[in-house]
Length: 228
Image (tube, rainbow, N blue to C red; front, top):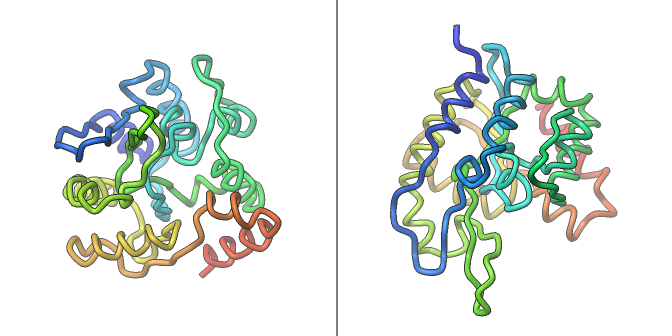
């Protein structure tokens, strides 16, 4: 019997975005950009998902350059990957503030084994998106930052969600991170009819940037939502 790990690893192995993007945007595929990302990702999922059990689905936006855009694991920078998960990445050393919140949440839940035994985190667009600034720098972008961008990636996102759900995820109740993200996921869901109930939660980046003093209250809110 194929495990959830087998299915996730196969999904990540075939990830490729081939369609056009609006000018000034590009897709970063961490599994292609860095040869170490694939084995690190495989080690993570084999450690925490090596069973056929159903998982709850937590849906982010799209990977950040310093989190899954490097490690291939959503909301996991190299610091948390090593200190919590025991998997060291030699070729990169990253810190992402969203990862700080998620791993504080994971600790409050009971640790990585307990959390990942119940939940799977990913995004409708599971590759990083960057946008070129006027001075030629490339910064993180969200799939919904530009209407033309959203329309371009929408078919890919629907197929991506369908493939992830088919791995064995609970679609009766999903958790969506970020209010704007939730609005767009509802748009996708009206077309694809994937999820029954969607629970909206504040995005970890928003919490860490603007509500860091209230982090404990937000962690409690997440935990109560997971009990529902």
